[in-house]
Image 1 (spheres, helix red, strand yellow):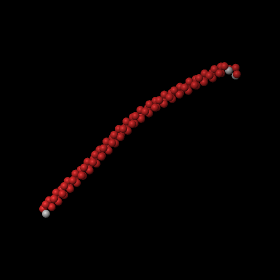
Image 2: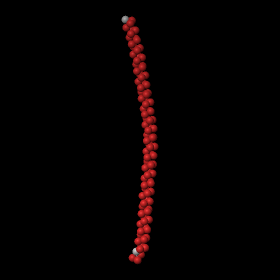
Image 3: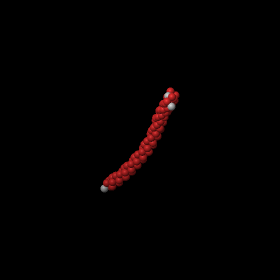
Image 4: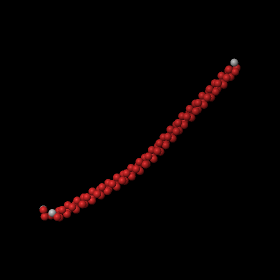
Length: 99
């Protein structure tokens, strides 16, 4: 009978210790998950910033190319206008007698 009481008390203590250990492990698991989530969030934010700077750089490059293209098109239009004006003046000079 005495042995049974001792065994029961020992089992209760072990159960209590194991329960505490499981609680601690659960808390640690939650803490690690929280820390990893914070790390993942920070890593994502850093990647997002890198992506943003890359996109900004690409946008600037494409915008620069677009501006260069626009300037060349405008230059062509200006050349055509000058050419048309020269042609008009020459035509008027040649056909001045029609007036």
